[in-house]
Image (tube, rainbow, N blue to C red):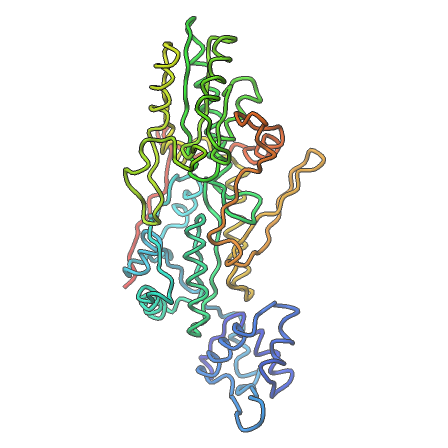
Length: 460
């Protein structure tokens, strides 16, 4: 047994058996629960692995199955610090990379380049839009996934993203438990949409919100430069939830933002919209409007004319063109100059306006996921619990079961939308403002951003 390696979790279980053997599965779960919170399924899978290693024996001769330590503490004591966290893989284009056996060996990367990921926009390893089917309907992907996991001895799986990513994470977690494959699965929130259920907010949202608010302030200044009547419509991302568009209220709060804000949480009334615009145009001669791409009429039809142009892998409509359409109708209605602006991809890749608070919390979420998985947790998503009372902002992490967050959408509370449905309340501003604080250090090269340059060595 000189070469026996045990993970940190296996050591916890073995120490209980060294204290007293034999023990039943129920007794082991009860003994481990106060310190680990492990479920019966987790302990059972770990016991199976220890039996395969020859570290535990199973006696099935009596009424209850009994587990005993097959090795003495002294025989494996030098290996106590050994862990399965000996190699880290990164998937090329998310879950598609796992299924296609396209895994990067992250150990091959220069630590200095990895550190630059903190200020590198987008997803350096690639992302995907791929919906895994329910395994009860078609388990082809799951069998392939298990094949890849076994090939590389993957025992920890971390997946970051939004609602669809947590759906993927939840399905994989439940499948691993069902087939008895010991792998700790943790979801890590990361979506500028900020619509993951259960968490105060999501990493990525604050930086996008900061960019949107700043851009609206800049557009406001430019849109008011000429002495003539003008209407400007800014289209902002947000299919089902208006968090991003609502962030434009920060610009208004500081005196240079939209006069009108329309979110998908409430029905869009076109005639009331025209009345709102004409009222402000008469009073100010200038109107700045922020609209969420997902705004819809009372019958559910989207205002955007691009609703049938295409869909992504999850069946979501590819939206866009709303600003141009509203600009056209407003020009016909009012006869004044109207400009439509679509922030498009810029709002989700503007790392030069990232929030230092956001970057810190993104790292906090990832670090918590790893620490909790190593401690034995699985089948959870890391979430934020925040306190904004007393003018101070405090953020802590907590764990939420994956099946409680997957496929649920968190929308802007209706009480944070004004009665006229054309703006937001102070509560929304108070919610977002602490999140955008701080200016991170941004490495540059010849006065341009210095982004990570990874080797991207594929595993063999």
